[in-house]
Length: 269
Ligand SMILES: [Zn+2]
Image 1 (cartoon, rainbow, N blue to C red):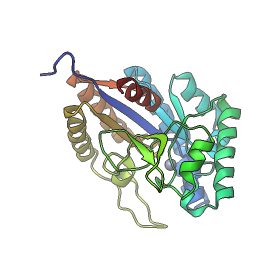
Image 2: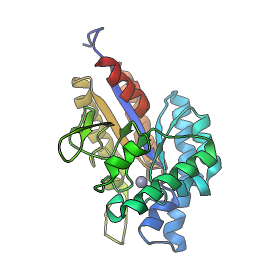
Image 3: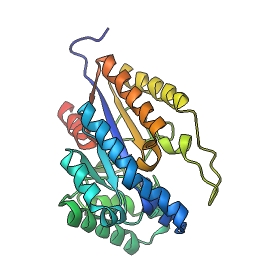
């Protein structure tokens, strides 16, 4: 039984719209891998946007600059659908491999590409590598970001990131996890590393439903990461549809953007 005064569980459906930039960042620029990225922009994104519209859910899309330059119409379709845009690098580069100047340039170019394509200025960031360099936290402050969603020190709770001397940063973290990411389950890769992927979608649904129970038990945050080129496949869209039904049927949750979740946290303080 849900007590009427119990705070709602917040569900953030997030989509990393990497398209071709994922394969470019892996150095795999021949036609076949690049076409996997194009699939996300030509097929996957449309299926996801249609599902979100049917379900009246607002989501957060993390978009690299390269995706915005190649597919500005899709970026505008996301914005027109009422969804939030987050920063996700310029060409999906890993911050840990960049100098300060290179990383600052990637932040800046990514920002410019999102603004040029859809007139948006994101306040949230997700590292393309789900990792920070020693400069990333300072750059988030320099570029006036309010929150990040790349790190893993909690599961169902937002928390504030700290600097190396434990000083508060003012940047709120919406934690991610490999358990709540479609890529480890589904993504098949021969190289640069071998990944078996191809999980039974029903297995993934069971794991995600159990994790949602955990988030709901503490009225916490359920932050799910997906990719249009992965979850855009029909069998996996069906899993997402099933998960949305389970969450809605629980009567305990609200679907929000990442910025909404951060605003709720601030309001509850
Ligand atoms: Zn990505």
